[in-house]
Length: 176
Image (cartoon, rainbow, N blue to C red):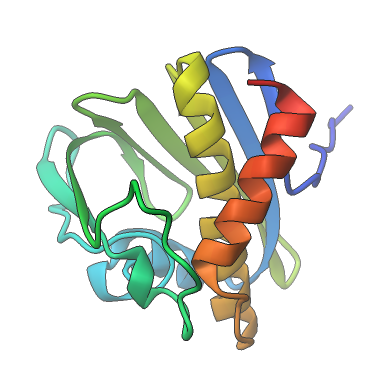
């Protein structure tokens, strides 16, 4: 029997340190894969950064959330214009799986499964402490909303406004 994942956009915490979010996105799978792995496409929904597509390769992700939507919304005072994180590819199975680790905040995996003309994306972020849960949950949720809009050819809501709203919703739903 195949268990169908919940498509609740808020995802779930299987344990306090692991966030899982599923999204059903417009396909095909190769197109979604390109948005995960190609810097110019990934920069339109998450972060830029060239990846050498092999296990063990190091790379840097560069977030510029003010550029994700037009308008960007109001950036919180405690966020800068840019954020950089050193990363390393842990797993690679094109176009189905990509996993990488960040030096200081756990690891994330992306699994893609073709579902007809759509693609089920499963994002799992591991090793989250209590403080990071309220940053990472709304962050992934907001970034995946932007990705879904980009793939659908629609305009996403202003990123920072969505993130602020989602942060309050995650606090209510998951505590913190």
